[in-house]
Length: 325
Image 1 (cartoon, helix red, strand yellow):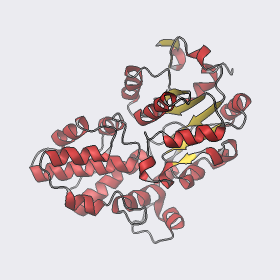
Image 2: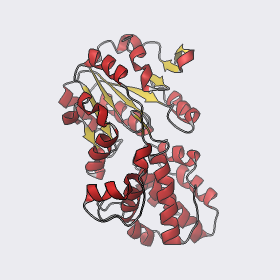
Image 3: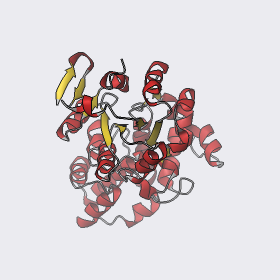
Image 4: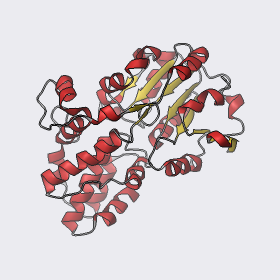
């Protein structure tokens, strides 16, 4: 890696500038890339976990999910879905109670034994240490629909708020909340969009864990600048297609008729997905964004340790990397 610009915190490999000269499309993740979610989704994780622990286990824990716990799971490559993190933390709390051990000890072991299979690796580990998780799994109903799953119902109400929740799902909310989606901080702007459109035309899309409603709600001022027809909103798809499954990215690449795209993400899942696309013959250069996290130094090290070719503090630096300015 070579630090091309110390003042703007850009890490770009020596050969990448020439290598991206033929890039013809750019595909973005949303959360942590186009939108700063530290006060929305990240907060929703803690509020959901807090509510469910009190409701199901009688445990009072207001801010149990620290940045270290969040990025511990995120670094494993199977927890792109925030609700999966909620599930893992709740099961870890359940296990600590059952085993009469400290939550700190159990959560460390769970993270250490997690992998890109996500919550399946959590289940397997807890079962391997003889924790009977059948009852709590049935209560949470992670694999149920958003309308029937207890854990998703709580998360969605916390994130969207009562009014939007009722609008989306046509069912009454049980929680009186204002909705943390209102705290999304949109990071893209007209200047960046203009620069990208000069390079890529209409070949600008997203492959995101968000649903289309949430994306459209927060990015409403920029919807016309994305090729929505060739974008993928994974919350609306089968859970089997969750990142790092490469198929959604390949579908977007094919739809854009791209010969070499840049995928801009902020997680291990994003990196694994982009790398897999290249392995399958769809040339994809991964660009990792680290500056939107509460512990940017952790994410920066993760990208550096995995030899990510382009590492940026912010999407505002993309035009400079691509020699668009």
